[in-house]
Image 1 (cartoon, rainbow, N blue to C red):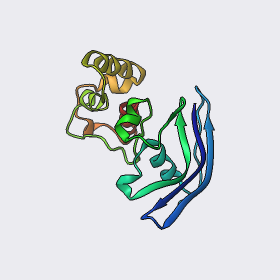
Image 2: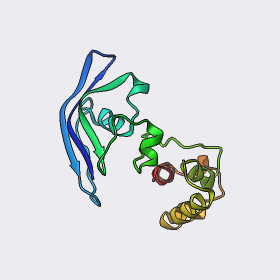
Image 3: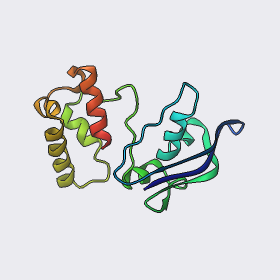
Amino acid sequence: VLEINNLEVVYHSVVLVLKGISIAVPEGSVVALLGPNGAGKTTTLRAITGLLPIHEGRITKGSITFDGSELSRLGPSQIVGGGIAQAMEGRRIFAELSVEENLLAGAHGRTSRDARADVDRFCRRFDVLGRRRNRPAGFLSGGEQQMLAIARAL
């Protein structure tokens, strides 16, 4: 379960971007975070994934917990290790690396055996990636690149 309670975020120590955000995401559910530009969607995701500090943002109030663990005190690597990852917008892939190499790049903290098993699983789940497994990722279509970015995050 992912829970955000009364979250407040500021940038540059002065710009209040989020105030009083509360969200509960039960295990196994899918949630869409919708809103107009400037509503705080990206900031909310940065807070969850620990990426606020690199954008000069910080949580000033509230909590974010995942399976009972407080995330706001953890860094991005620890958060990813705990099972939360973000597929960035803009299909941020390594164009010159193969599809398989891109998937392996997302296997942070996994053993080589587990990483290979994950690659095999995602190549089966995303059949088009399996068919293009050894091709440079830059040759994938835009939609296929987005699929690769999502699979790498998973």
